[in-house]
Amino acid sequence: MDPVNLGGIFFYLCSMLSKNKIKYLTSLQVKKYREENNQFVAEGVKLVDELLKSNFKITEIFALKEWINKHASIRNMEVNEISLTELERISGLKTPNHVVALVEITNQQINVNEIYSDLVIALDDIKDPGNLGTIIRIADWFGINNIVCSVNSVDVYNSKVVQATMGSIARVNVYYTDLNKFISNAPKDIKVYGTLLEGENIYQKELSEKGIILIGNEANGISSELISLITDKIHIPSFANNNNDKAESLNASVATAIICSEFKRRIGF
Amino acid sequence: MDPVNLGGIFFYLCSMLSKNKIKYLTSLQVKKYREENNQFVAEGVKLVDELLKSNFKITEIFALKEWINKHASIRNMEVNEISLTELERISGLKTPNHVVALVEITNQQINVNEIYSDLVIALDDIKDPGNLGTIIRIADWFGINNIVCSVNSVDVYNSKVVQATMGSIARVNVYYTDLNKFISNAPKDIKVYGTLLEGENIYQKELSEKGIILIGNEANGISSELISLITDKIHIPSFANNNNDKAESLNASVATAIICSEFKRRIGF
Image (cartoon, rainbow over all chains, first blue to last red):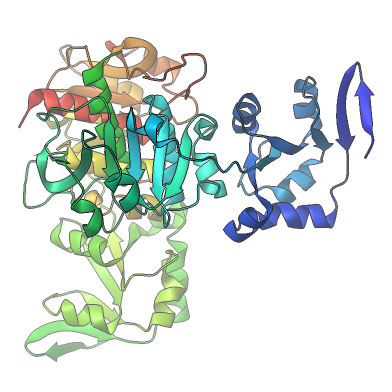
């Protein structure tokens, strides 16, 4: 495809999606194919705008004419004008939203020294894509730059995760590693906070400015081998009127939000 | 179907689901049919156990033999033993979980005096079933007994809402009404808290023990006519390092969780 010069703006314009391209884009819904090709898909006006501003490398864009007209300054990137029907064919959303981007997966090395010097969220086998996406959005809101996931956690490039981050994936680093090693290797002065039923009331407990906030799996909580690495057991108390008949737990992302809120409000601005 | 006496326990046992029954159960995925028949469907071991303990009236149960054996003390209720294949046909879950219950919808009258004497969550057009279900679970955790929804909010008997409550639907009252009237008619001393960008930092603001916590729609926030009824504008501050490049907002249920946590931790236990 030859580059086109439109009003001085240099980009590639193609039309008519090939069957192979459609097949390729939809194949990236599956982790195996994302890993083979080192690419993932992000959709929608807001999310793609956030990625365009970020360090992520977008390799190709598929968008309606309207979107392309509004993004005339995009350079050195293959931009494909597609019809609404084509958008519907490649979109994973119920309501496709103007643009689909093909993005390169960046396999960053964990900079443990940087991570240990701040608050970091560690996720022990979070399985629900909505939860991971929401936790990334929470981390972004509370200025927590790093999330370390156990290797069996849901993939951050799963399209439901990407979409649920509402763009925060562009600003928060998400790593996958052996959590046991990651926590065991932390310097001695790094506190490891984990929510357990027998933990101390988080509202009354002293909380530090750096440390690891460990969040457990949705159904099983924190795994036993990681429980032994917790230095500070915390608990969000229930305020239910009837102690015998109340919610058993909070959703994993909701618990993360309340914990991050407690850590950060103490530190101040 | 004749009642069966098994070891002194009197209940109805039927088998083989009719096509009409399957059609009826799946029709209840649609609000129109739930309203016509005044019934909704709840699934899974935990949720049905919570409903059995609650004031909800379960009219019929469809369960695997294993579940029935464990619930031998159930009385005066039609219990249908079904096969796994039948369960899969009537279930709305990806992974069907032993039991499906047909539950009566109870149209409770709002007791405004009771509601105004405590904290109440008011939802302005919450559309996402997962958000409503999660907010009901949060209310249950924080001992908030009542949620008042605008009439255009998602239906609480939507199966995704019911499932996301994880059983808390059995303990929290959810009403639908004209929110404008509900808030306008509140006694003068009742504060109306609403999150707005220009609101006061929630961590520094005085919060009362009773009042209305108003949560806006996922995409559009609080509607303009309700904004004018807010007496106390609040805001959850972002702690992002770069103020120009950060998450624009928090998810509606996450914001609700942080707000409820702030209100309740001040009141104490």
